[in-house]
Image 1 (tube, each protein chain N blue to C red):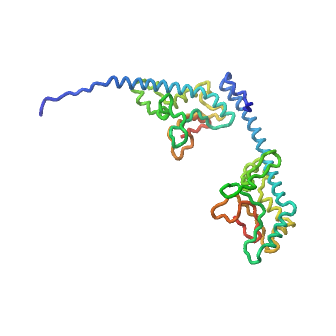
Image 2 (cartoon, each protein chain N blue to C red):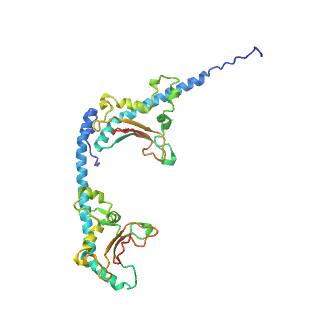
Image 3 (spheres, rainbow over the protein chains, first blue to last red):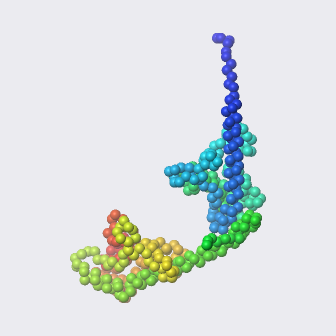
Amino acid sequence: MSEKFTVVSYKKNSSYSEQDEAEMANLLKVVEKFTAKICRTFSDKMVEATRNNNKYVILFKYNDDPEKGELFNDKIDDIPTKYILSGAWIRNAQRFFPSQKCKSVGSRILEYISDKKFNNGIDIVSKQKYNVSVFHYKNKTSIFSNGIIVSRDGIVYK
Amino acid sequence: MSNTKTFESENSSLSFNERIQLAIKERAVIQEEYQNNKKIEAIDIINTIEKFVSDLLANDNLTKLFIKAIHNSNNNSRRKVVELFTFNAWNELGSIYNQTIPSVGIEGKRYSTKYILSGGYKKLTDKYVLEKSTTVKELLEKELKTDKYHNGKDPETGNDYHVCVFWRKTGRSTFKNGIYISRDGIAYT
């Protein structure tokens, strides 16, 4: 058996990685901006839902499937809404940023509405915890449109 | 001019809790208004049905129809029915007629005949005017059971009268949509 062997080293493709990181940084910015925009509507929508006795609040809706009707909100700052809402980017983002920064849209909203300002995330009428449900694909049994809803009746809609 | 109602709870300078408390109070008012409107609607539907049935029977109309049916029917024919009212609400079934029934109490309002004949309002009237809640069929049956109509028995055939109400047509439908009184003892459905 030959004593000789070759060591092959792979040079990290720094330019690819940097580009990837930049893309992820941009995506995080978009997610933060999008979540902040959604959160700003929470108070008004929750007050309206209380007035109308609705069991849940629709914070955001989108359609990216032409077969299901007219497209709307299918992209957020040129990034597919499905990609943002599904959280498929989180693993990739965690390669470059601390986990704390790579939270999903749903958990960001939940964190926001769990604040003291919003009765610690407990609905004042039903005394149930607000639950955030994010829908990013539809099947035959789907009841809700794709998007983000917050339930007031303690049910985690799936 | 916009008719959009504004609410105190829309004031975003208030805290979330204050706004929710206001919304709870507003909801009570909204629900009361809603219930009142629904009750008015329920009462109007019942009044409309009563008027509709009384119009159908006015001027001895039904008696005249029974007599005409006896005059025109063949002794041997098995099917003996009286056509009291018909309607058509669908273009594909021919020309539209008697598609709606005018409300008695609400000016300009018309109820779809299908809604009235099918008893689609029953859940509403049961909830708000249970003691008066009824259907066209029940009202006609009640009327037919009086002395005036031989206590609901056809004098010729000896069979009970049956009120048959049709509001949807299928490929197998024999009768037009509307109200028929059968004299041959068969409750046509």
